[in-house]
Length: 355
Image 1 (cartoon, rainbow, N blue to C red):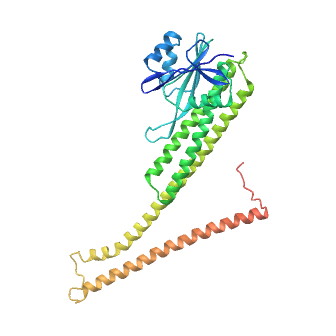
Image 2: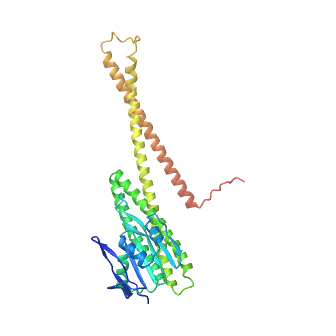
Image 3: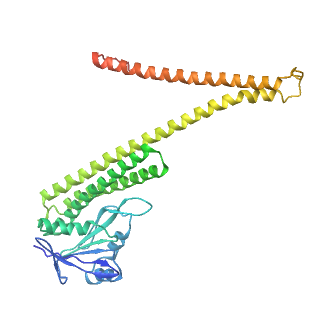
């Protein structure tokens, strides 16, 4: 069994290093020794010096991990192997609830180092999980696979929260369609895109790690299968939630379009109705003989004529709209009845295709 200590979380500006050895779960020790896992979160200058000078970790690996857009991949330099994964975390950036960040696992013959430039809940939860279950992590590949498995678990956990947020936004939109709720759905959609690409990248890493360690005693096929199953479940879940969210946003977009069309119909009816008195009034603004100068009630007559014509026009417009609604409803009912009849009788309608 390989002793595997953990290095370094920071609190209050001070470096707090924990050396955890894998026995029945990770057990904390007082000092660092060779053949250990060195975990660094949010490294500072002292951490960088410790990794590059004492452990001789290649500086290029640390620079690659610092890139927030780095995709999951592997890279070798001498006896060193760099494995970059993407893990989920909560975020407060512009209202986006969750994002994914890179974590690099650097391995050598007797050294395992993991570096992440963000503080996440995944690593502390992973350590507590190994303690509760009494899990023994006896080699570097097992550690990498279990971290990938833990990332899939956290993807699923955050996806449940996203699903709850979508349900809450839907309830608010059913009451009143507000821009804030629509923007929230758009941000959740962006999070699902991040999750989708990250999970697919981690899945690709499984195949690469299998090829790298296939001729060693590190490969645990049962653990590998469990990791693949968990990643597939996370990938399928994110696709389902993404499809549901896309359908929801399309539905609300259709509702907004229908509301705009209804408003435009009312405005059109009002414009046509007001056009009649405007047209009549314009006639009396012309410099022509209108033959009503001597009529004592000419003004009242013109007002009544305008009102009557406007009322008739309004009634005719409303009647046309009602007829259109009845025709559309009748066609919809006819096609539904026709389709039900075809399905009930088992009628097959041939469609001639061009030769």
